[in-house]
Image (tube, rainbow, N blue to C red; front, side, top):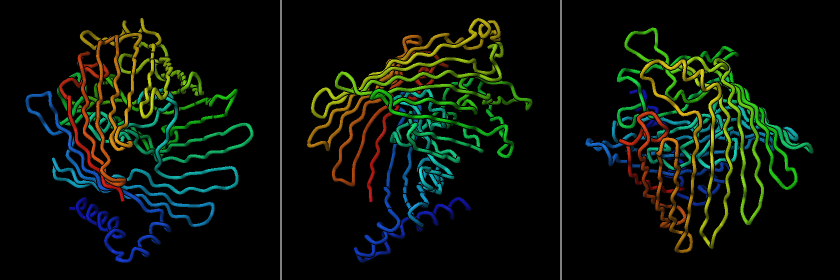
Length: 420
């Protein structure tokens, strides 16, 4: 009942500007004062692989976005989704972002829930160690829902030496990965899963990040340093003290990285590197904690012809202390590769004065001989209304590899959005 009341209040409050102002002047004044905008969106995603053909997503969302300036140097930003899950008939409120922003001199300071993005990869993340929503990405929601907001303090400083971003995250937030009945990834045993608890008040469980960025020799260059936790435990699981349950653990992590982008050969070249220092398992002999690893990516993006763009990427990661990892594995445990490589291609083509867009994004992992293919067709009927049809097609691999674990969850989806 409480959730329903919150949902209804949110709908009424967010819809008030739409239905209350009969005068267009009043509506325009409200939009200008609060920079108000939003959309109503419906998404339906259907499993096409399993015999049960379950619905993965069936929801309607009302998103509102408001920015209110109090002075020339201070403002409030709020982006909220009021959603109805049509499959389980439940309502919920998703606060996407909610922060105060201050602009004292050369500083830009944000306090509150906000989406943080690092790195240069396209749907492949190295230094972007902030939480992701993999259910959205693999289940059919628009790409903007891949990122999850962090409760954080972010301070950006710009000067002659470049820009410096300082991040403090007091509330650890893990990834949203598929574990539900409708969409589930690899689980070693068919028993309930619980998550290790992090104390929000203990400073030892806080996360910190520093990014330095500067243009050097016509290139956009960045250095990264992060100290926090792994966001996805993957197959790294420890047995809980509670009988009949497994506990997913999120070990401490330190990341050192860099990235580079520059215009070259008629397009944009990207390169990124990150070293993942697994602070609790540097020797690599604990099978329940992820080993240290290094990760690298190179990419190239350019326009091949009018309204036709291609992006290609090569990604590689290598597990450190691999022999210790192999020696520590319990009998029958999944055996992960020492080296993993992935190739990705992204093609976009627009037609009919850019109102029709055909896209296909694909990733192939030769180590596990697995792939993910994401084709889509999007048509804009007006400037404010569009419909998109697409699919998430997983192929081969193993029951515990990146994409192979979702082979039984191939899906097609339909999304319609009206902006206001």
